[in-house]
Image (cartoon, rainbow, N blue to C red; front, side):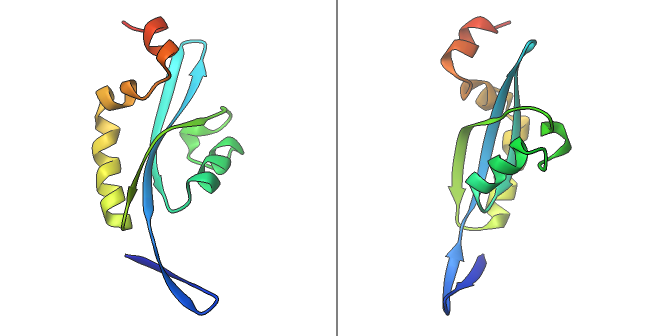
Length: 101
């Protein structure tokens, strides 16, 4: 579990697994990651400071799950990265109808 101090208090922190997506001329791309702060992490991806794969594109949050600790989030991230059905299911509705193969 991750703890942080804030004004003398010890706070239990949570972790998130997320899927972000971007639409390209060839269809949608998705990226799966984990973080302690979803808003900050999405901002980093959109500023080109995230993972190398995400640089230079505009991303939006498509899906997130909350966990009590980093280890659980990282385990789930590993699973979701390989679950293409889940990744496709969180795409915007119009993407599912226009880009089905």
